[in-house]
Length: 274
Image (tube, rainbow, N blue to C red; front, side, top):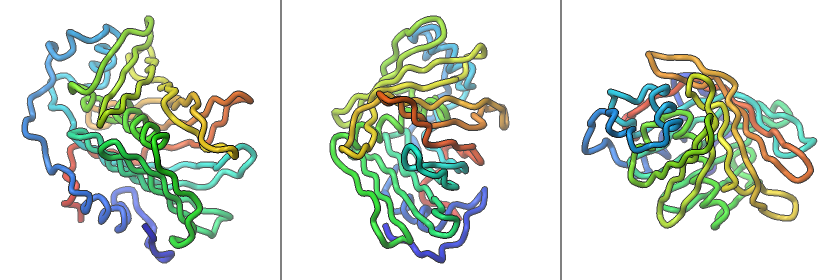
C-alpha cells in the first residue's frame, strides 16, 4: 500500500494512478447480468417513506446502478482538539457484491502527505494509514472493522446510489413519518441504519450504531451519523452537495469529517479507466 511521495496531484476527473491500479486489480465484476429498469412494483412492498425516498432519488424507470466512482474534497481531523487537515479522496463501490475501496489523501502541517485506505469485501474490512507512503500510522482489522466498513458501504449506497439497495440482501422497515430503517446482510454480517428524509424525500441524515470509533483505550461501538449539507441535480439525478461525519460520544459530539462531492459516475467498469 506504499505510494510515492512524488505522486501527481489529482484532478476532478482523473483519480490517482495507485487508486486506478488498486481497483483494476481487485477482480471485481465488469457489469451486471441484467439491466431491467426499476418499476412501481419494486417499490410497492416497501414502507411508504422508503418508497418516497427512492422515487425522490430518481430510481424509477432506470436500471439499478451497479457501481459508483466518487471524488471528494474537504477536511478531516483525527480526534477532538486535533487540527483539521485538507482532504482529497477517491472511492469505488460495487453493488453486485458489496465492495468498497476508499483512498484518502491528507496533508499534515501543510507539507507532509498521508494516505489512508478503507476497504470492505466479502465480510472483511480494513483500515490502513501511511505517512509519506512509507510509515504506517494506522492499521486496523477484525470484527469491528468488518462491521464498520459494511456500514459505510450502506451509507454510500443510501446517499449516492440508492438503486443498489433494491436487492434481496436489503431489508426495509418503517421509522416514523420522516424516516425509515434499512439493513444490509453480506457474508454473515448484518448492519442497519435509520435514514431521515427532508420534505422532498431526500436524505437529510443517516444514523447508525454499527460502527466503531478508535479511542485511546481501543475501538468502541458508538453512534455515527452523516448529516447532509444539501442537494442539487446533475443530469436529472439528485446529488448531495456535501455531508459531514459525526461521532456521538458520551462526552459530546465529534464532527471529524466534512466532504463535498466533486464528481460521481455510476455504472463504471472497474478496469477501463485511462
